[in-house]
Length: 366
Image (tube, rainbow, N blue to C red; front, side, top):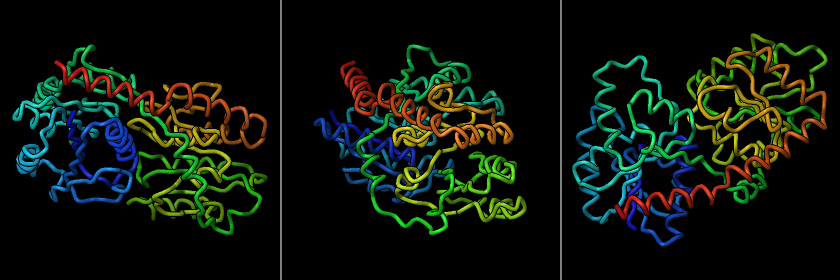
């Protein structure tokens, strides 16, 4: 089977890692897999075994027609059987290309759709287009329900396939040597945050939680892996809260896993998510995890035995959750082991990829 994967760019991280899992697995199973990236943003190209073709365009509406014709031009040389779009912002381009070329397209819902602020015309156009997809893969139950609600997609057209985790690869990456700041080598309780430094990721909530801890919690540190437009704002917040000596902005890392492994717990305070790959990755490294109960994904991963959920934006309850692990080391071990077992049993990468491969084969036979 000849498969063409269309991505908007290779600069974000989570989407690219999952796309590379799919591409590499299909290639290893004898399928011809080609990858097109609309933008020339190759930060995560190294994840892919196959070469990537860049359109050197922009992933924006004003380039829509140009991008469609650039992709159609490429398809002529690929002998494509099935198109895959792994990101929401390339889905509709891929569907239009599919309609023109008469090649079936499989699109992924990597996040929870909310079109409450969109016009009825926009919802109608998106509904008409997405219903032209041969199959829709949702990475969470919530994403599936919202797609049915907002875009009038029949339930049978949507297949839930959770993102998977390659535990062997993660542990290999986690054991690579990295430079840990000397201050973090002290005997402290190490919290790790990984994500873009933007409002949606909720770092401000975590900083407030740390500031609320009593004076006898001076041994708590926070390692922040990531960069973004609000970094200066968060640095100023840490200064204002008088916790700057506990907070370490380590920047974006192509391999964040040694830092996650080095930590005591992993916290994801997001206001919203697509499907939180990084949460699964921390669990795969046997880290106790705390997550906001945001849409979509965390409450489909965590229960009261393998992780702790707290209400979105509630820094007081996040503080309490952190102190649970801080005060009860045995609880931390129990949650870490159950988190790992959850990944092994429910989010095994090879199983999820085999389910996807079967879906693609069925589409190709129709």
